[in-house]
Image 1 (cartoon, helix red, strand yellow):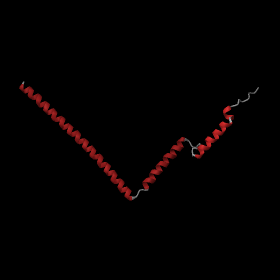
Image 2 (cartoon, helix red, strand yellow):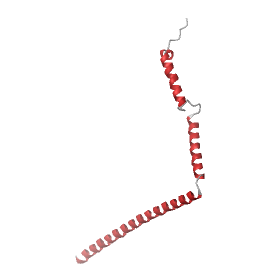
Image 3 (cartoon, rainbow, N blue to C red):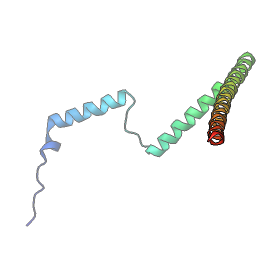
Image 4 (cartoon, rainbow, N blue to C red):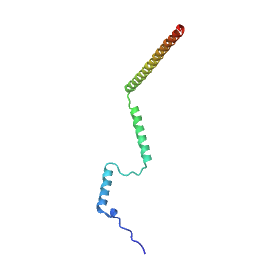
Length: 116
C-alpha cells in the first residue's frame, strides 16, 4: 500500500506562486537578485573595490593638493605638540605648587616644634 503525497496548500496556491514571482522580479529589477557568490566573496570584493577607490583617489591628487595636504598635516602635528606642551606645563606648575605647600607645612611644623 502506497501513500499519496499530501497536498501542500502553500505550494499549490495560485496567489502564493504569483506573489513569489512578483517578489523575485522586484528584487531583480533593483539589483537585489539572489547572488551565486558567498557572503565572504561579496565582502572581499567590496573591500577590494573600496581599496581601489582609495588608491585612485590618492593618485588623482594634483601637486597643489599634495602640498596643501602636507601643510595641513604639519599644522595638525604642531597643534598636537602645543597641546601636549601646555598640558606638561600645567602638570609642572601643579607639582611646583604642591611642593611649595609642603615646604610651608614642613616649616610650620618645625616652628611649632622649636617654640614648644
